[in-house]
Length: 532
Image (cartoon, rainbow, N blue to C red):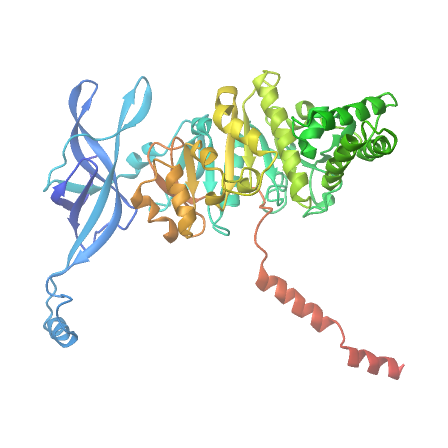
C-alpha cells in the first residue's frame, strides 16, 4: 500500500494495543503530536488482515546512564570533556486506530491485538493521515490543519453536531474566532443558524476581513433591540432589523413568569388577569398601562387591594426589561429562514433583558421545530453560555436556563442543535455541558475549569488534559463525534471579519500620542491668544 515508508524507530519493552514506547534517533525523531504508523494484524470483515495503525506521539524524552543526577558537576564536566554520549532518545505513542470500510463508509476501528517489541515504527504518510481527518464535501467542516503537519487539512463531520458541541477556552485563546470558522462552514452548507451574541462578536459575519461583502453576505441578518446602546453603531453593520416584543402580546403566564409571580399565588395572578382583561377592552396597552390599572385597583378595591399591590410590586421589576416595543418580531418569519444566519446582537442590554430575549427566542425556535412548522434543522450558538445556564450551585437563576436544558436533552430529536461557547466551564450547568458529546477545547490553565471539562468529556483522556495549558493561541484539542479520532489542530484563518477581536493597545496608544502632539498645550494656546 505504501511502498516508501520513512523508518523512524523500533518498539521496545512493553507494548499494548493502546500505547507503546519506541527508540528513535536524534536526526529523525518525530516531535510531540506527530503521527506515526505501525503494522498490526487485526480482525477485519471476519478475517485477519495486516493493517496500518495510526498512532500519535504524546511525549518525547531522552535518557542517559552517564549523565546521572547522582554525579556532581565536576564529574559531569569531565565526562563531557572526554566526549562520552550514551543518550538514548525515546518516544511514547498512543494508538488512534486503523481505517476500514463498513457498509460503504470509512470508519476507524480500535486495535485489539498486540504490538510487538522490535517491530519498526514509520512516519505516517500524509495520504493516510488525510483519510483520518477528511469527510465528503457535503459533510465536512474545514476548521484548520494538524498542529504537527500544517500541510494536512482537518475536516470535522457536521453529523457530529447532532449531539451538541461545546467550545471551551480561557479569554484570549481564540474561542470566538474558532466559532466564527464553524459558522463560515455552516454558511457554506446552507445551514439555518441562530447566534446568541452578548458582546457583538459575530455582527460582521456578512463582511470579509477587508470589509468587502462575500457570496454568503445576503444570508446574514443582525437583530437588535432599539433600546440597546450596542457595541457598534447600526450604520456600521449590514441588514440590521428590530428585535422587540409587543407587551400586549404577552400572555398572563408570560407576564407572571417574567415578573416572578409563583403559580401558587393564585389571587395575585387573578389580579393581573383582571387588569389585563380590562385593558384589552380598550385595545393595545403597555407595561405602564398595566401598572396604572393595578395601582388603581389597589386604591379602589378593598377586596383586591393586597393582591393588586403585590402584583404591582412584582411587575414594577419588569421596568428593567428594555425589550418591549410596538410590535413583536416574528421568529417564524424573520429569524428562522432556510440558510439564514440570524445574529441576535444583545450588546448594550442589561443582563435581565438579554436573559428574557434568549428565553423567548429559544422557546419559539424549539416550538417551531417541535411542531414541524419550520422544516429544517436549526443550529443555536450561545456565547457566554454560563451566563444563561449557570451551574446548580450558583445563586443566579435565569429564565433561559429551562429551555436551554430542554434543547440539550431533547433538541437532537427535533433537529435543534446547540453550540455552547464559554470561558468558564466550571460555572455552567454540568448536565447541559455533559450533553455536548463533542468538544473543541482551546487553552485552559484554570484547574477548576480543567476538572469541569474532564468531567464533561469521557473522550478527553488524561494525556490530552495535560496538553491544554501548553496550547498556543488558535490551537485546539477536538474530541467527540465531530472527528474520527481526537485531534489537535491549528485553526484556519477566517474569511469573515471578527467582531470581538481584542483592542490593539499599542496602536491605540500611538493614536493617543499623536492626537496629544497635534493639540497645542494650554500655555501655548494662551501665548498665541496674547499675540493676537
